[in-house]
Image (tube, rainbow over all chains, first blue to last red; front, side):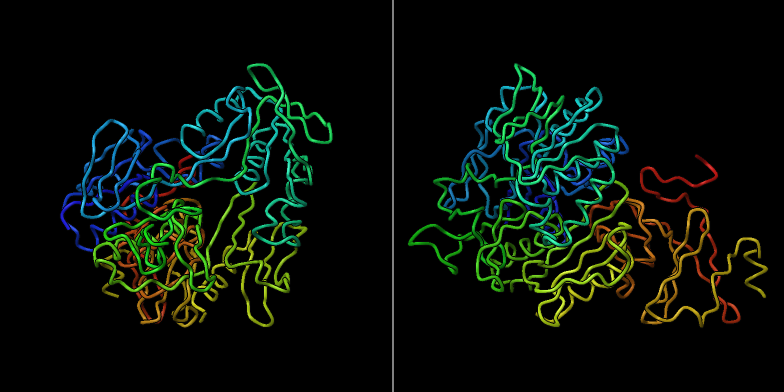
Length: 398
Length: 127
């Protein structure tokens, strides 16, 4: 293998490039990134960066003295792929033909209808998004956050800390219930309410109001929520539009086998029909998970890091590498002065028990079990104890 | 006593009796900045700055495996021997300190090198 093209220069792309070098690849390495920025870390964008506690230099993922020996093509998007020829077409009209291709184009924030015509309505995914939101926060008094996932709850907490009047609009019963389960999600909801976030449950957005600049959010029940700034945290969709017609099989992401090899679309494209020399990693990739019995597109930071080394090995070995054992995803979030840590799958549990601390004090650890077997653990300001539990879950026999 | 004389008693911080730090365990010394002391499963003792170089987290609360400590928050791993980090989000090495065991007591010899503290964390003496 003499030329590898990594399409996507964020966490998954950078770490796969790094893993290729660490595993001995010494050929040409081309890194293509749609954004103009060097690789940066996204989790702080909704927290310390938004708050102003970190600056842009702090977000850099590369070490000061790091040199991957790569050709960087930043500010250039991939617009097409011929999987058979392993040829990537770029937005500046050039092409890169490679022996190995790493697809790491990530995901984009879902947008609300009508938001493109109104100033003051934000999504939060990129550094440019965060800069623009940070700028608006400086003069805003009232914020409405639409969607109670991680982005929504983190932005709500940050804005509340900054002194804004914050309303969090959640379509379901409780924010984060899909991740930590309904019962424990109440403890996190209570934290938000205690700190001053107005939480609206079961609320659906009808429209954004305002001329040119947003001035409110109208709900389907007619309630009008006045707002100087609105953030939509309603999920993300994989960036795979550029791969239509490429010959790769697409679903909710680039469908891959358990080692990260992209599946070929010919003849129905099943496991085993991998496209030679093409792997996918990060938020755009849906790897087959034998334990779940389906393709699983995992958007978590820790999964991107773990899969990068596997994908590099798969590419360099021509697919002979054995798929790594899947481990439960580890997720963290910082909200107010509270560290939330979670590992496992809450939906597999039939009981959940607080084993340490008290949810009312915002310091507790809860263990989720299926029968006797722990399947997930939630830590809220219980860093030391949570590490012990995470170790146990990650090393337990499947 | 030779070691004491050579290093100077002033520069050694007594950490704990060796017997009170079993293998696989860690201890945090409330120095400024704090120091973490680890006793590995192989019986080696190492000392590093306790604060992760990425964000304010106590490495003594982390996951010790071989000669590596994994940060309890975001899972970057530091080599206890060199301080080197394996993967983001941390990107700078953690400062290492020498360890001396004398008469079954663990002492740390604080490094003269500047610490690599995360953004927002400072040594108390210098705001």
